[in-house]
Image 1 (cartoon, rainbow, N blue to C red):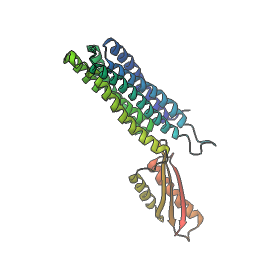
Image 2: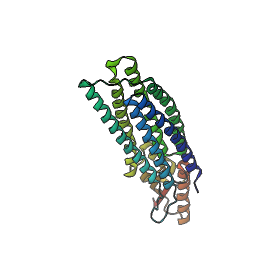
Image 3: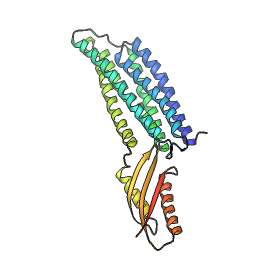
Image 4: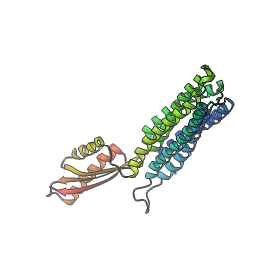
Length: 295
């Protein structure tokens, strides 16, 4: 049975997927009929968006599976894996777009006449900008509310599509309104789109690889964890802190000092208080291990 969080992620992803399907069909038709390589490249980008929507749905479902004998910490890393796959998909799409655009630019430089795109391609770009920006804002808002890495990655994929459509619109518009000698602006726009996508993909992969390689949480969060632990009366000098992400959840391990004369039960109760205050701050799914030492 899916949790409320998983259901919300599916709902957001399906909404984005529906928008992607409509846009990619419209863009392909507009690109072919409007003779625009930049619009066809934009359509391929929308196709990659749709594929990543499917990836998000599959991997979020897997990440929600409760921990078992083979996964003591749960399956949260699969959500991070989804973000990695999205980043790799973006790079693959970008390379194809840049290569195709560069070929046309080289052909133009060699004297080949490039066909000017039509107004249908320009309208497709403008509609895409508006639609994808709305989907980006909706998905990013939900990614913050649901603390979902996969949704965050998908949101940036939507934003990259919106921004790429801006470059596409400029290139197509220039090729249409500036005359035949400026038709090269269309493939130039597709190259710029591709390079922008590479930048977005690198950021996503950097974050995903950091989580997959057990990168610590940001320094400000670690400092906050130590302060929260120290706020419990009787707890002294929280130290030897180790942190990491497991999908959308945190894993926290730390040592604390307490009076060596108290009973084992009292020490256990204090350690439980530390766990409770940290789970209240970072969520009930947070993995916490507290080691007690006498001072």
